[in-house]
Length: 260
Image (cartoon, rainbow, N blue to C red; front, side):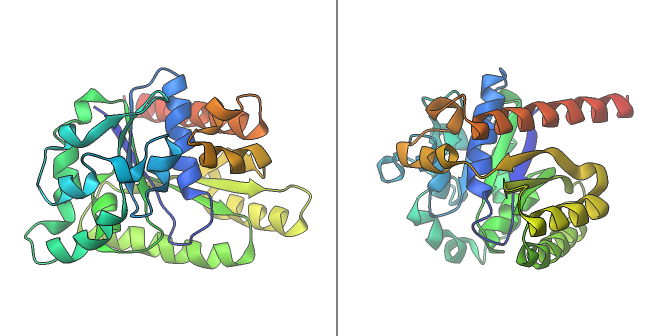
């Protein structure tokens, strides 16, 4: 049974899609069966996986509208994992399903058809609280929050945790934040260190030890349609995301062991 994880933050520009793509790639390198679901109409996770969003035969839009089974819409990327891609067609889906019974659970029901084929399903959420994002959060068990260590990020974090609490109470009682990831991290910056300390006090063990540094090669990789580990495997960004995947696997193993 797959572990289903959303990468979410209502604030844009925090490395959300970068994290979704590179975590998926790193887990695949570690021999895990991975599906990346792009739930953002910008389609950046699709493009960052080397798939042209405008050339998709089927996309997540077709799945949400019930036009094809999810398995039909999944594309095999050349970077070690599979992708349920997205493009601008997704922007019109919310209106189409707004009056539909069970509209919040369309993605959840679709994933149930294929989750036994994967070890990890990573869902890249849009930076907004739309019905599409609610679908994503109703479908997963876990949330990873990527965030920059800056003042305004803390305000956005409070909004996001409230959103997750509301969805947990109303739609998905199993939903939980499993990790907070510091991205674009610059240890030379005093504010970065101060915000990082606040995060550590607030989230404790849920704050990943791994930090994602500011890295030129990491920023360049999406333009080449490649996760960083395929673009420049020796870069600091590639090493950081491999470390994140390893840390996540270790925490998952410990958690499973504690329940045994």
